[in-house]
Length: 299
Image (cartoon, rainbow, N blue to C red; front, side, top):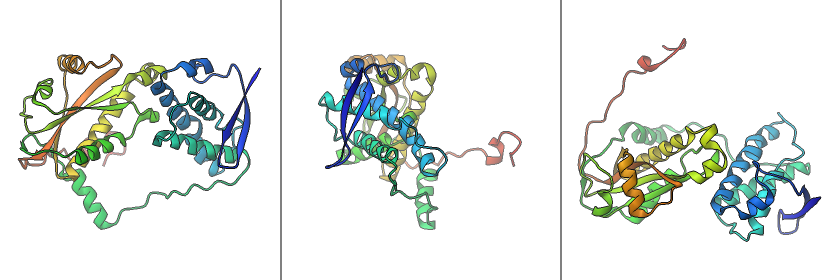
């Protein structure tokens, strides 16, 4: 038995395709996907778009591999399930998946595909000065002036954290804000945070479990949290704010979970205090580069 789907590539092109009724994605049947939590289904769409289209398409465009017969079918199947459930399709990540699907469909039909993106190019000297200021002059700030950090600035630094590298594009990063004195007491700290806000970097582990990443690549979830924190600290510095990356233990995690009534699949990883700096500490220095090189090629 086959299931017939219709997929609209543009305003005037509709592609009809057939999938076996027992077609599965990562072991999930169509019925499983129709009942699945949308957060998990959305994560699977992103991950399958990455692994079944994104990592292949640029090799195909370079002539290093042929277009697979089933190229894009998995993502098409997932997006059709998403649409059949009448879930919204206007979010950036879903548009990104649809864009890759459209490109895959064009290649399967033998059409020429041109992706209008540019190769990385060296920064100018002036641009490099900005980069060096960002990377080499950022410091951990542990004292802050009184003063509100506007919502606009908070959104900018959180967006930077969201855009950090994430393993397999699962996008499990979540943010929790501690603003009031009561909330900030949920994490023990050896520095005063009265004049700072606290960003708790969390993760939705449902996506990892569904993909079995908690077994195959359990380290990825910690790397993702670290990358988000780094982006937050860098952009805070660029905006004239001061930030410090902090960790918390099991007792702090318990207090945060109970206070905000967090579900068991939301895990807190670390927290970052951010505010208007009231100190200018010496920038911490590292060892010489030749001292940290390992292997035959060290200088």
